[in-house]
Length: 158
Image 1: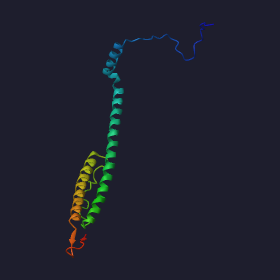
Image 2: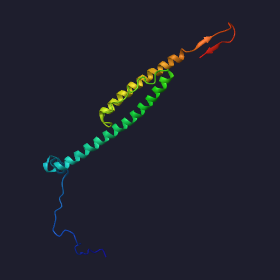
Image 3: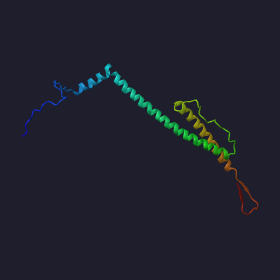
Image 4: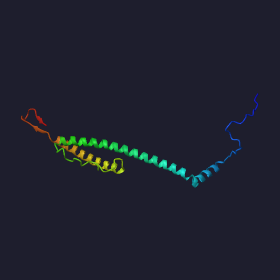
């Protein structure tokens, strides 16, 4: 029952004989090195390098956009804190107005904009921390003790 049967050739199959090559592992490595040196393969490698370059650039841009979003959020929060602190210190609301802004001429997605935003945010944070420290100092030393009776209860005025 286990007999071989010759079937008619399938349509679309090769009708000519072909050679099957068997390579040694050293030959494959040599051929791969030769292929990388072969100038006819250069356009494919250029496309591959181009895609790799584009992918890397895209990741850098995405990371920069994320950093800009985070910095903008921090910058806005610090501006609100500064306004609150100026009110507590009874300072002119217009003081430092626009001092911590980034040049509007810069491209909002550029590395220069990111660096300028980082610098402005650092300066703003420093100013907010100074103002908060001043609020703490004023609050700490704004307590007076009034005593009407020598041995009686004391009243604290805030």
